[in-house]
Image (cartoon, rainbow, N blue to C red; front, side, top):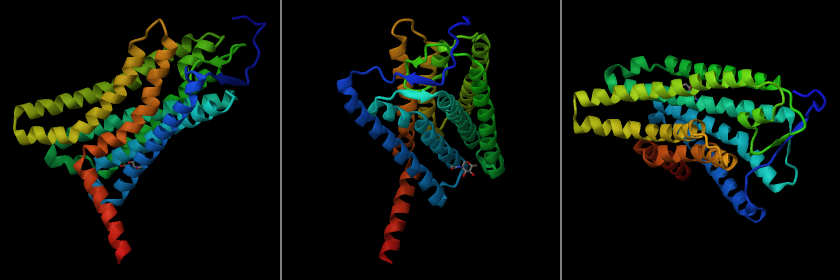
Length: 314
Ligand SMILES: *[C@@H]1O[C@H](CO)[C@@H](O)[C@H](O)[C@H]1NC(C)=O
């Protein structure tokens, strides 16, 4: 807009969380504990799935991919948050900020695509149980995973390149704990209409399409159960879909709450709390949702631990 205060910004300042200084240590300990839980819980899932041959099925390969993506997703924001909470230096270099934005988008999208792949897997498992192994071949699973990676790579790159062409003037203070795309757009001095249009269109495609696909596959699952209602069928559907459905609700619940219900007053605090939900809480809860409610996972844990113990004894 104005030519004269168009200084080139080399770094941003992340204001972090809206908390009082005397609460900082408490929150620091809390987030550190949550981060460590996220890493350990998800690592445990990946290790279990790789070690136990009973879990070498498409559903668990996708789950292992989801856990990997959870670890990366929380590692994009939380270590930086913990670092800024402890030091006085709140700055983040311009390139670091864009890199963080890129990987944040990347792993958030990846999660969304993996949830679709898992929903499709459940749909095939329940609606075509006899053809399950032929339809969900290792080749198809790998293609779905690779496709998710490629699509998210392009999507995150598109937003990052569009962000890189913007000018930032004097104000470089981000009222957030990571380089959030919408927070950065608010700081930009140049015209952000193209960015907003792309966010609107791609956001619709990337968030709404997977959500609709998941709803569709669950609608098919429910209708196939209702066609032949049996206690056994309902139990099977609940036991295999329950965990996935909980993760889906957690993920889309927070995202939809954030983007579809914008509030005018106090929006910074609300945005931060919601962002906290999906960057810290969701990745931490995923392993618990899967392992606590799931008999296969518990069995695998028992088998892996028992095998360790017997090999010790021998
Ligand atoms: C992700 O899924 C693919 C395809 O099923 C599998 O080969 C790969 O090992 C998985 N990755 C992880 C980290 O589990």
